[in-house]
Image (tube, rainbow, N blue to C red; front, side, top):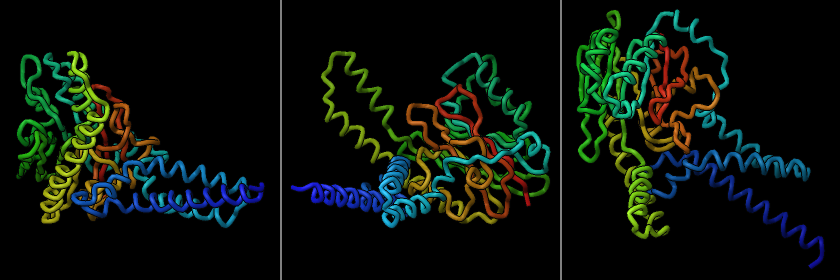
Length: 354
C-alpha cells in the first residue's frame, strides 16, 4: 500500500471518528429528553458528555493543524451546540456576594449534611449553623438531616436563628426565618429518600419552596459491600462487581425518574412563585435534571460564579445539588460554599422577589 493510500485511509478513519463523536455528543445533549425506562443506553450518554466535549476540542485542534478547514467546522459547530450545557457546569462571572446580600430579596441554601457525619456532640451542626448566619441565609434546606445533637435537638439549636421549620420524615428539613403557612411531604416508598414543600410567607408574599432528596446511584454502597466481602476473604469477581454496579446504577436511575416525575407533577400545580432545590443525585441535562427544571430557571446558569460547580466532594466531583426558581423571580447570585463536613458542598442563592 502506497503512502497516499495510507494517508487517505487514516484521513477517512479520523473523519468517521469525528462523525461518530459528533453523533454521540448530540445524542447526549438530547438524551435527557427520553425516559430512561426502556432507553437506558441513550439516557446514560449524558454522563460522559464532558468527555465527549473534550474529545471534540482535541479533534478541532487536529483538523486546524491539518488545515482541513471545512472538516473543522464539524467539531466547531458541535462545541457551539454544547455551550448551553457547559453553562450548567462552569460560570466565571465576577459577583460581589456581600454587595448582593445587601439587596432586597431572600437568600436560600441547600446542603446534604450526611447526617452531620453522625457526630453526636452537636458541634458540627452548630458550625454549619454559624456558616448559615455568616452567609445571611433566610431559608435553609437540609437533606440527610439528623435530629440528635449534644444536649438538645438540632432543631432546638437552629430555632434561635430559624424560628420556623417543616420536616419530611427523617430526611428533609426546611428551616426558615419567615412563617411557614403550609407543608406537604413526599415519602418515597421505594427508598429512604424524601421530598417536601413549604409555603413560606415572605413579608406578605407566599413562596413555595421544595426541598428534594432523590435516590442515590448505589455505586458507593456496592463498592463498600464488595470491599467488606473482600476483607472477609470472599472472592469478589470483577465482572460480577461491574454487573452489580451497573445494575444498581440503572435501578437508581429508574427510581429517581419516578421520584422526579412525582415532584414535577406536583410542582406544575403550584399557583405561587416556586423555588426547587436539593440533592437530585443526577447530572445536568439528564432526564431527572430536565424533568425537575421544567419551565423553571437554573440558578447557577442564570447568575452563577466561582468557576466549576462540582457540588459532590467525592472522586466523581460532579454537580448534583441544585437551586431552580420560577421565571417571576430573579436570581442575583448563586455559588457553592466551602464547608467540608459532608460529601457535598452547600449551595447558596440570593433571589429577588420581583
